[in-house]
Length: 223
Image (cartoon, rainbow, N blue to C red; front, side):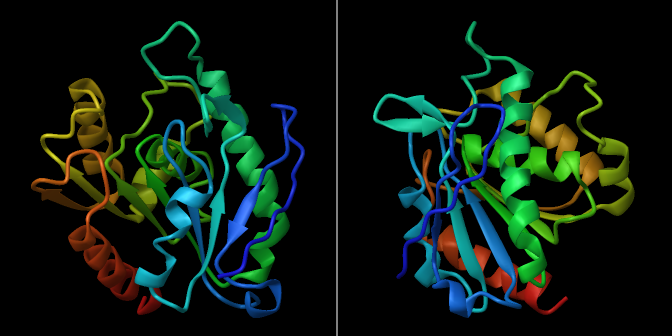
């Protein structure tokens, strides 16, 4: 598996670090799967899933721009005094600046997020609803922006893009208010495939990855 980094200047004053599943000479014309890791993690966390996903995809795993302990975060935890929706906007814009530089090289773009990374994946979709083939969300949530026009939810609802959302109902990390909001938002705005898993807690299971593999083949590669 090859590793590469690429920088993109953004409002947060840091470079965007990207780890790739394929060397540059093998990426042209392939569908692109963009991965967003969870709170306190890094770009190496999700890229290990690449061998279990359709080989047709080029996978790019992004590092969040804000430090958090030994890892990184896309924004501060929602229920803390440090959180602001501007942090979400800044991270979205940083990711979009990078995507704008690479998207012409790829046939389709799918967004994949774990935990806080699902909030990022859905936020990119809500900001630019026409650019993404599908969203994969694992043990995560969507952001309640309280009507901020950074999100074009009306356009998302009109298009109804496919979204996979897998979670364990006993997940101890994602709070119930986030789950309820995400349920309400997704059922009104996307073509939702939701699967509840047992004994997975706050993680991604082998069964879920098998389902995601199948979902990507049916909803993206065969579409």
